[in-house]
Amino acid sequence: MKSKNIEQSSIKPDLNYYSASIFFRSSINGDSDNSNIWEEQIVLLQAASEEEALKLAERYAVEQESSYKNVEGHTVAWAFFTIERLIRIDDFNFSGVTEVFSRFLKYGEVQSLLQPFDD
Image (cartoon, rainbow, N blue to C red; front, side, top):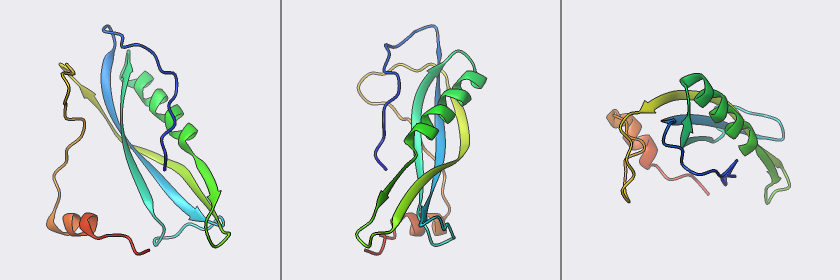
């Protein structure tokens, strides 16, 4: 899913940084089952509070929803599912490269993530 930007504003030093993990679910012709593809987006945002950050992340997620026709003529829709987690990032100083997201995985999760999608 291609990201759409919302309100591009300058960095405000008096605000906190947050990382939000957002899940989207795909459906084909309105049907969504366990074989459909999911997307996880990790976004970086600035907000005065956790509540404001959650609202901003939700607004961003809803604006990312989209649909299109695939090569078979079916309607593919991407819908916001949930904010999986919201993490405040303390002492954020961007200097060219910064870690935005990391996670610990079990072996089975790694194998699943490394498995290419069938075309």
